[in-house]
Length: 191
Image (tube, rainbow, N blue to C red; front, side, top):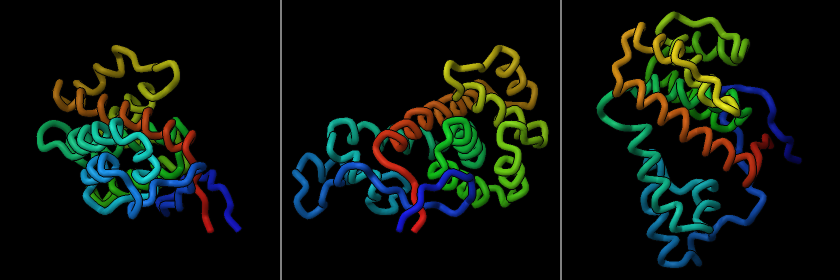
């Protein structure tokens, strides 16, 4: 029996779609083309197979996701993952929070940061640099957004350039979108 997951952890739950994902064996040529570019180049997930029902959108989504999350310039990969984690905590997307918290740890080796976030969520106390990133992403992800000029100034004060700040906006914003897609198309479950 499956149980819906509601708490944050770095253990990535299985995501179960509400609709039947596209079957790779019977996918149309347009669907196959759209699925050739997948996040992280780690195969075709159930989520991507579900998004393949709209191949035109998927063909745009995957390259955009890859450019935002794995770009070579600007914000570090770990800091992008922290922004995605903050957005996922605000949006209560335990699947995305687990994935991006794990990636943050992989890039930075800072389990203490994720432990604090998962324990205290938006009240987590981090070092000044990571706090500015986390708070900005969380405020930007609220509905309606709560990010202020002061939040942006905090990023500059901890040394983020305009390009790094833009990368943070993009990584947070794409997860506002991704979290909502995950919530409406399926749910995280543990077996």
